[in-house]
Picture 1: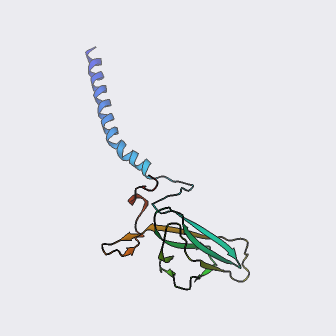
Picture 2: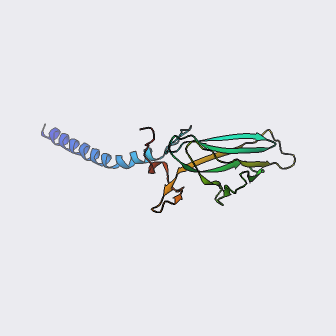
Picture 3: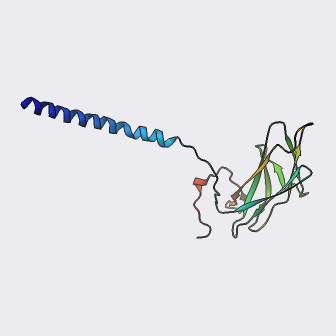
Length: 174
């Protein structure tokens, strides 16, 4: 009987020690499983200004303009075009004022501030197809981004394209 009590105590202590070791490693294990995830779908993210892209297509050219649909916030905008291998695109600023310019980072930037309710001038994106390319089997995707207008102490406007969603708190409409 005494031996059973000794083995029972030893078993309880062993289980307690094993539980402590398992609990100590559980946090790292849970961190691993919650760090690596995948996601699908899309969600509209609003960071103050709200913009909509308008595209018309004619003669293998996308005519792109961005409208600031915000009620109160002025913004700066930029666009980027994605296309498959074998295609190329040519950009043309239709404003006549050099309002659109190549940022040399893959984006085309609109220089003037886009006021609340205003729109950009049209940026033409000509799709250049190589000879023999099937014009019915490709996609050219235009994305647009906007950022709020920032003002320095002298009242000079600037854009900060390094801001991310986590840098903002939703304030519009409250």
